[in-house]
Image (cartoon, rainbow, N blue to C red; front, side, top):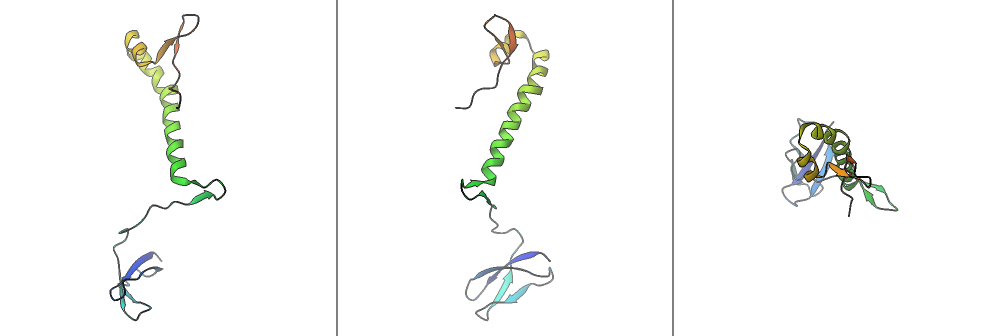
Length: 114
């Protein structure tokens, strides 16, 4: 059974409960009628605390991990392709190619996090 959100028309109390999709309304604790709300209306982002000691939340961790993966993919896969496609001048301007201490051209490193 799916979980639905019901709001009472008399007292305004909001409750969530498992109910049949055919059920349109339920009886509230105040003896009023609570009507089923449209699924997803008023829904909130789930922010589960992964570690109660450090208070690390799921959403922020996922954003940082995805950003790191995209940066790593860009520098390991896309930059070598771009170097083969574009001219030397463009590669130097974009930072894809850099000169090392021995004045050799090497693939640049991703920008450091500040």
